[in-house]
Length: 75
Image 1: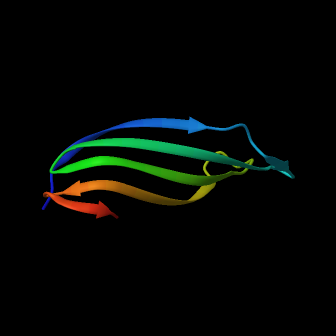
Image 2 (image 1 turned 120 degrees about the vertical axis):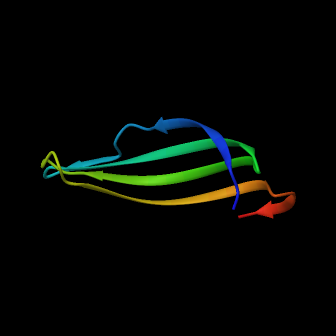
């Protein structure tokens, strides 16, 4: 098991679509890891919000470049 911490930078861009109560926007999240996991990752999200306060969703993919327990690579 790996243990560590990360610092996060959340960069939400203005919505690129607003139509019939649905809003779509892109978010880029950058993390810097320290501990057993060392490196950086970039996550790209597409966020969907609706007019219903408790209804939302997202899809995301994250790529980490660095080391885990000394093993170097991209994960």
